[in-house]
Length: 433
Image (cartoon, rainbow, N blue to C red; front, top):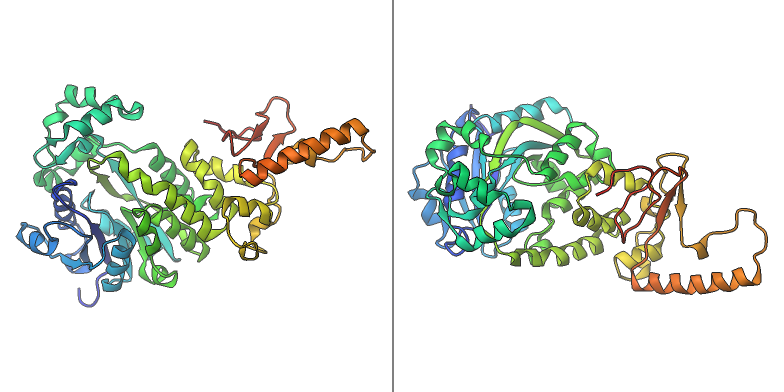
């Protein structure tokens, strides 16, 4: 095959001995060198994001089955690395990878085939799995355990089962080798599982409706995801301002802008990969709060402001989209609470400043009692007026403090009665957590 390749794989990489070394990146490159897609029909671009020692001196010493281009950034950053890779890519399609994602042999071929058949600009979502136990390893190829990380994994409720399982199955000293990646990828998949968030993403994207859902943009991730290069360039690439917050929400921001640009989401179920989580402390979470604040301030949309609930409460994308359908009028004052800034800059005329349609005639917006008018329209008693004034003052104080948000109520006596930002509960019979 001559001419440009069909897909460029972009791998931002930050590898230091203090962090987790380069064993995961090496396995990722081994997996990419064993693809069923012809070797001249794809390229692999590693963008060195501040690694020590520099990857330009390390990668050439590895016995890799295919060529790899290494770019070195003068200023590191996750979004900056993607943009540098995008500028260097020769293919019309780019895969937004990570340095700890290992690919099945047919993954790239499946991505290319999907986009050729799609007939429209799409983000291709590969099927991502996770080898949970590798988080305990500094070097996955030698099963070098980091005791502090293993203890932290055992202490977390969601992964407390992992320590005993690793011991019982002999995984505590079970490395992941290049031979596993080359010849026994099915074994790696057998030791992997789909985290709940990715299972929800695959379900929603597989329905073909994700990009049309109110919260569908929340499905966007990176690791095993392909996007037409022209579409990324049209939206200005990844937002490098998010590098100030550790790269948090680079993927979510891309999802917001790609959907707004008319790009659809499609599931590429045959493009399998498994992630090899690396040890990390809790410090990496510090950028999450500041990153979310930046995202809200940037987009000035009520659905973005409310997305904090999605991450905090663990809603599914479909359930959260239905919740957003019940959100009443988003006034400039509401948006100001979520994203402080000059009132004149608030998204005037944005769809989220209009009344959102309710999912059924049984749902009605429920505001504080002081804001609800009497159904009969009759004059209230003086006692009611005094009570209303007190309630109004209270509601006003709550609004100014940014703690009050609208709630909704179902007309059915048997359905859950309301949902609020504060409680994270749902309305109109939607699933709750």
